[in-house]
Length: 353
Image 1 (spheres, rainbow, N blue to C red):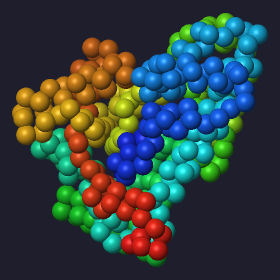
Image 2: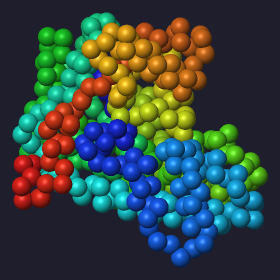
Image 3: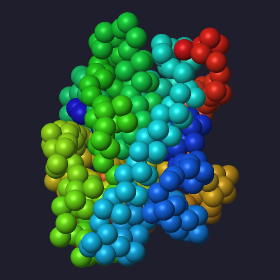
Image 4: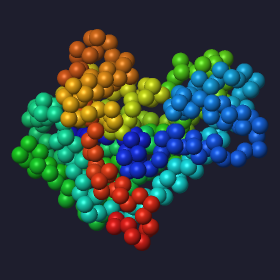
């Protein structure tokens, strides 16, 4: 059985890193530039910070300000933004020193990885149990598709292995021993350590100025599928193959944003392809009052509706796959808030792992 995790920026935020676009913009707007074009660009961001909280989508809308002959001016702003974003994320990564991942933090991470379904409501657990009962499962292979440019999750994912061989990771699954194999981490949009980064919108409909779509210098920069085809076509193929071979997909730390629609479409098709396929989403919903049944139920409904909308589900789609989708709120799945976050900004010499 193949289990695939989709990891988003919510993981880094749970660890305490300031990796949201609003965090970055607070830094970026203070960086000096000699370019009048970039100064003007930053002035416009400052006037509309709430829009730039989703910077990828905002870039698509910002194209309204440019004519075809100004494409290089747009690229100057875009390239400057990406350059400093990469630098900023690198500085954030340095705030959390992880070398030999071990102890309570490692055990909590392993538990979240291997017992990801234990945090779900009872009804969802029963559906997954039906899946386990339908197949003779003596091994599970875990793959990671990370939508982050940072490598914090990868460090922890491979770090828990330490000196152990994969066979040491065994758990009880439905009363039987199951081996858990840690396989691969794929960076969907690139890795800060291995540039370039793929950043932008999902498709042409998210570009306000359609005239710019005729220019390859524009489309391969801002339309992510085009950028991936130019430089990371093998990675895209790998990610698609991992999704297709999955029995369970678990989404953690992702807002199901519009600028990744191509991936939500693929997952919907994956769900429809086999009724045994199961999708789990762990959502951080700060407005939810967990002790209040009304607040909890309302938050779950809102999260479901958001996912259905982003997946562009028809009424027929929803009827077909509704029971294959499981959502839970505000779970520190990997234990990072309790066991990793307290060591943010701690000197390397004092770090326990």
